[in-house]
Image (cartoon, rainbow, N blue to C red; front, top):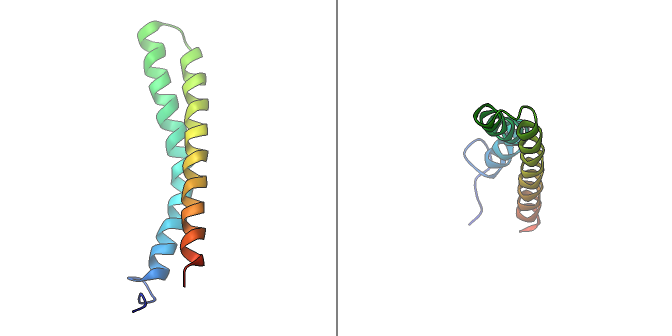
Length: 79
């Protein structure tokens, strides 16, 4: 049995997955930079930890985007 098309089916899930792409990267960067900023305030080392954790957040966000894109492309190959 095939999945229904439309908002509740395969097309709706694809649309929701693609919409999440726009939030994953900025949220990861903000989370990393926020953690770094908190560490900088705690240790008085501004902007070292903010920059380091911001870059780590960027790397984590890109990794997650590639994972999601691969998963979506694998789902599209199935009959």
